[in-house]
Image (cartoon, rainbow, N blue to C red; front, side, top):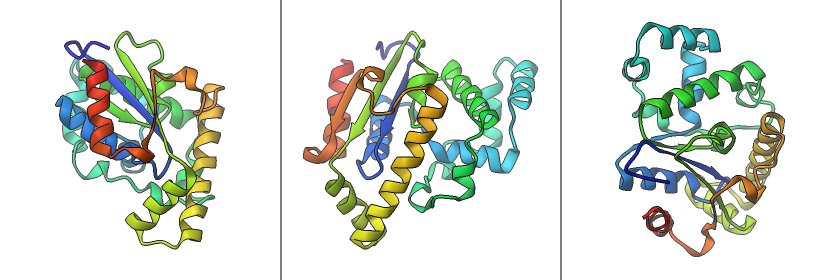
Length: 213
């Protein structure tokens, strides 16, 4: 990946691995925007975006994403992820339809067309698999490490934290498998695979920056 040209970095991560925080810190170090599930969820719920509506926006203005970003206040509160509170059977789980996936893909491609960025989740490794300047990263951690981290961050019991992790793991794997015909754990989808249990988020971000050069 050439950081001197427009680039996109995608991060797949396990819940509790710290991957989202790594993505934020990496974006800060590189001076680019960070996007995650909260953006897509907010756009879908507040603006009911479809592929057709996005295509209309793209056709109206050459710099459609900059204008659209301003309208929906991207870059602020929308990025506060709520994935710790996503139970199985919730609306968020049910919103994995083909139409929504296609709309998400359009939004992600629109971001990458207009700016360098770091994107967490949303099958980014697949969406940008043919992008000429794309770095794909997977961040993992042992289950017990993830449980302890979620317990500390959310004030949950061991049993509650483990239940949420297993639910989210299943949801994410089902989502990825459905739309990419691949497992999110398939190392062939990534340039870098990192276990976060022996490193801080800052150290991992620094490691990736050194890899990029």
